[in-house]
Image: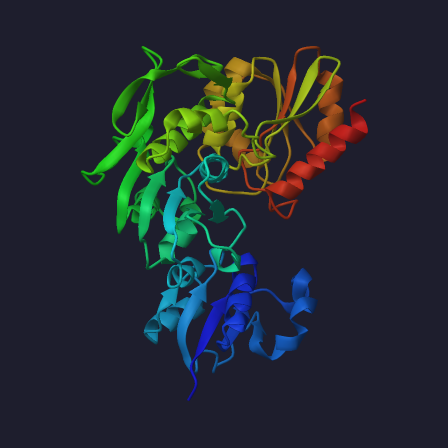
Length: 435
């Protein structure tokens, strides 16, 4: 009897698995917890509709299944996973599937914040230095869809992927940072931390920010990158590089320099330089390529300046540490648009910097009352029902040299499909109202 693969989830990962199995003549089934009418792209799969199961699991779903490929967003508490475990059917990810046929060197990157910027920045630098590379994984591009050969595959990995991965083989593995996040999924910070540390299994070179040096026991062969504020010097692979210095706006190497976008991005730059050094790429050349890097959208993105007021889209900030980085980057007199869908987060960690820099908070989203119970702030606050109201109110209170910042410190799923959808809504509202 011919065995089949079972794909859990019909999102980006699931669709890439369909393409991969179809191309390789491997039979499969698909299960998605949503109903059929909840999936926008369902018309694309009419030719294989007999393979797709929705919402309720049929009794024979696991018949003839020899392997399960789980999507990162699939609910880990779903009963089907328990049934799969009881049936002793192996569970893997699309990353494991990809590694079975991959010949390129793997660079794996995870972290609570910054991982998408680091993989994008590293891709830019390596390609600029003549090393064919591509960033994929949690950034929305499954490695299973790659059609070309590359010298380096840069994998962005979330804790959801690292939770189920079985093949951790990498040439370089890096953790950008680890802070309190995703506890609603992983139950405790320690479990979340341990899952993140999985990235160091079967890796030739281990890297992490020196900011997390003391939060856990790391392998002895790990190298750290970071800064030393006293002398404005930079740590690259456990060595203080006296040639690389910085101030609050620029980073310097010999006679070359460029502006960086916030202290968190200084760490991202040092992560990229550390990896480049491990790959034996000239650090001066890498530094030069970083000068032309264009930051990704929805990350402290200045979308408009009007009457000397700047409007920033930081929709990607879905936790407190990311929002704190945005507030640190901007000067005082900030109008902060805060809130979104509910998530277990310690919002009190924002209280001090809000009192220091924010002149007004506008709450938008289902978790606004939850945030208010935790914040200890002495700035005026307003509640709004939608983004247009938030922008109208911000415009009313904004004065010259103020900054209006959408940095929700929350996921977006109460009102939007994702942080991109939320960021686009902010941009459209600013374009329509601020003139």
